Image (cartoon, rainbow, N blue to C red; front, top):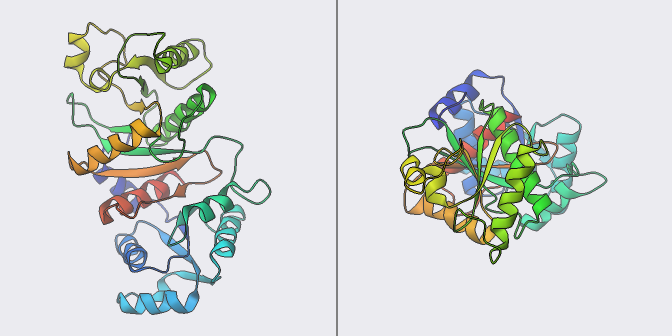
Length: 300
């Protein structure tokens, strides 16, 4: 089991290098990131974009462009489609968004004929190290970026995506907390009804490979002391590995609070496609971007 980011980086450095296709990487931040990832032996890269600009930026960064493969496709839409094709034919193991609109990037990913759509819900998962309760390992917060107001069936698939990632990182039976503002079912709060339904679905084998409980408030999902104070029993309360937020409005600010208030190191994974998909925010630190690449390289 990979217990922290230090172990993740070390594990990736020991594995055969995976190749990541970056769409439209023409930007100083992306080129610097590629340089650092290669220097730290985390991944190899194929850069799909404007070859002349890419080589010029590599030179400006003091980086030898011969260390990467470059595919000259200056038009962003076509670059995204070419990167998807490279992943499809096995010439790359993962795909990453560079300096192009997210909509253009995701349109190529989700194309029903040529894309990486796996007929599943694609969801974002934020990984961070446990700091509460004296436990080791990662916590997974989802979905902080893609699904705005997921339905019950979509939440089931979002859980399954997070469970799949936890399994890949060595947690054989992750504990899933379905969040709400309270830890009791309240008919006036539909999210508590869905949380209870997801819990029962897991009990009956409709969701497998994990333990699911909910509704749980955030404090009693991650803090054993809080769970004990509320007289909550079961294996999930106070010990959650995966935290399923009810919607984007609750998940996204929680992720940003982790980063900007508590200074947590985080990484991001997109699951549900045929191959790992890497999307980083412009406000993400270089550390977050590097760790996100490391996660994709590890699970490819």
